[in-house]
Image 1 (cartoon, one colour):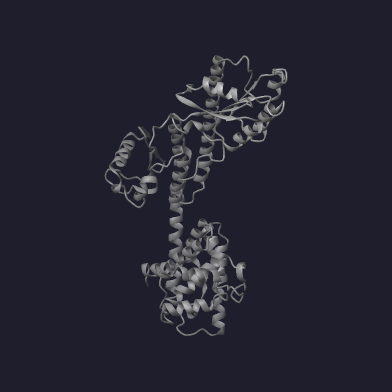
Image 2: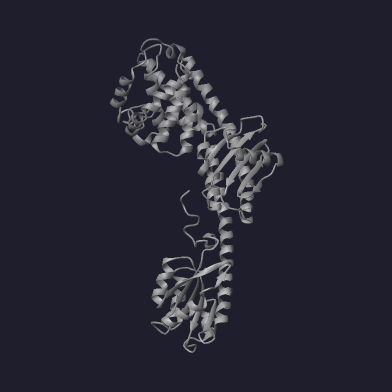
Length: 508
């Protein structure tokens, strides 16, 4: 993780280091004031942290310092500098123009009559107002303690507020994850954000299996030093991680051991989920609270994703079964629909469309020829060339398939209706059944059209032999901008090695 946590807001100075100095800005046009203040505060410490005194000699110079950094804990501002009200104007600009409500602002003046204390306190957002004559060494010390204590507490409150906001935002992103791997990756990303860390993290899960006896536990996502374990099973994990998991499973609860947090949460389906976080620093109470809250929210989403995946697996298998039944009726291989599904997903991903839509196209593409179920055997299985009337009947399978699937509310079936009805449309508008043209053809129809033709040309059928790859690609190029979306033809060429691997994986 390279992004800074809350980089767009006021930085959390409490995490810059245990002994990092407090930055104090002195704004005064008298050099002697800077010298005396530096001498008095030379050995001052608060919360075991020293001071870093920064000098500015005019209101404008002070503003430039404040505008260039967001880590000033306290600014002590002279009222009368380049103008009689330079200090008053400066504190107003700090609050209103810079929107800085964190830095403690103390006005210091040698001419109290110029700006009466009551008027200044009422009209300006400052924390104290001091006459230079009354600001003795002891009172300056008191002022430092009070101001820094106030600044520290404001930072703590604001840090806690922003952390809780991040829990809400992080949970929203997690809830929107569409797959278990996307979910697990989002968990890790958000925990890194929540805790401002780049430690070693990974997430492991299983369903109804014994941890000691089973390798069903699998790593879903990794980060930091654990990246090498991304594709590993439980048995390949480091002993320290396995030990932490075994303890959490025995206790049925999350636990902390030094800088290691092991999260445990289960679902009503019987799934046990484990989250390992190496902080490389001691976890404080806020860290533990955030992790516990987060883990409980994550469990709900995880269970929903398990149910969703089960439904999608069922839909996928039903689509394959129906597609294969149609292919077998026309004496073609069932591997055709699986290859078309995988080609379609590859093309969709490379086209740059939304991952969820790409997954949906993969699920629905096996239904592209479902309308052939209504075509008579005498036409569907005819070994020779179809005559004009027979070809007219054969072409009706596209609209028949679309109509057959159209009325269902299921998103996979609805996408199947689009694909079935449009996979014979052509880029130049000469296709069927509706002579759609160019981008009027749904991207799913355009993708499946190319995947279907590429695979059909490369497969042996009862009416033809399989074409060599060179001839297939030559024909596809010939139809670029005519039958096929030109961008998809380019994608085919750019990913031909991956396409051939799919063909080898699912042969006829």
